[in-house]
Amino acid sequence: MAKKKPVVIVTRKLPDPIETRMMELFDARLNRDDAPMSQADLIAAAKEADVLVPTVTDRIDSSVLSQAGPNLRLVANFGTGVDHIDLSTARARGVTVTNTPGVLTEDTADMTMALMLALPRRLVEGEKRVRSGDWKGWSPTAMLGHRIWGKRLGIIGMGRIGTAVARRARGFGLAIHYHNRRRIDSKIEKELEATYWESLDQMLAHVDIVSINCPHTPATFHLLSARRLKLMHKDSYIVNTSRGEVVDENALTRLLAAGEIAGAGLDVFEHEPAVNPKLLELDNVVLLPHMGSATIEGRVDMGEKVIINIKTFADGHNPPDRVIETMF
Ligand code: 8YV
Image (cartoon, rainbow, N blue to C red; front, side):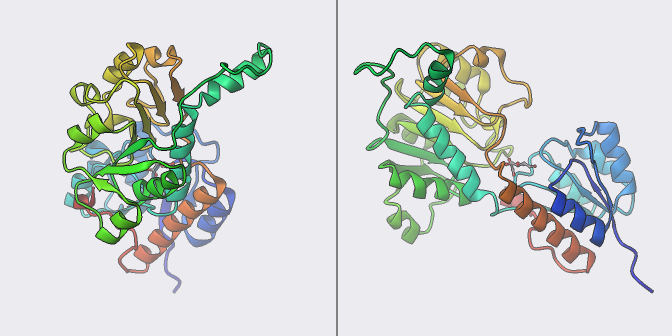
């Protein structure tokens, strides 16, 4: 007798080829109109599903997991960050969690570079000037920004994305500095001519651009606190393509408004999709709607990973991207 297909509930609309394949392989319940699910919807989904496929916009907390039905065995996250999933409750209830690492590294690193260039070179301001009809033509003193070649970049979190950022940044003439839980492989450190800072405080005071590339965990919540942000010098920039929670957004906003930090490029926010209204009033920021990994190629690759994780798990094997709490 044919094996029953697992009930797979997907919380958001995914790319068409992924949804088509999921319909072939699983008893997939899709969210065609992409309306974000409420906590009540998530609880109902967890009661019914064998596998839940959430995204960063779903809070898979202890309340959702503790009300899950006995069939829920896998949460196959569509995304790499798992800070929206209560991993310890999942473990306690025997629910496996997987994610999609690796496939959004290059896209996120590209967006990090885009923000790094946009700030000192006043890209958004320049574009607005042309559109406004205000542009009177070239002038030797117009739109002067700051050179990035020869400056010091401090990367917080030298995992896959941090390393991909470093590789790109080298091509732009930036000197690589980094802070990480562990020092990276000496071969890679040498290749990147990277300087390791055990002390984040000391690195912050030393660099011209800070890039946040570490995951959000209880240990990195407000890692860039008011005290630490004040260590940055007043001509320095900060770029965040990781998670808003790693930075104290209120403190950052105050320092930007006071000119204590030169600018910020933010793709993520502490209370998404809400953005601190005071941040919206500032000129020295570039604000993006969490689109660091938003390429069609990346989204399809993420979907493929989700499918492989579910299929492998349903076939009784260890899924390739199993999340272990200590990894984060
Ligand atoms: C994803 C991300 O788009 O993968 C991550 O952790 O932050 C994003 O780039 C999002 O998480 C999809 O759920």
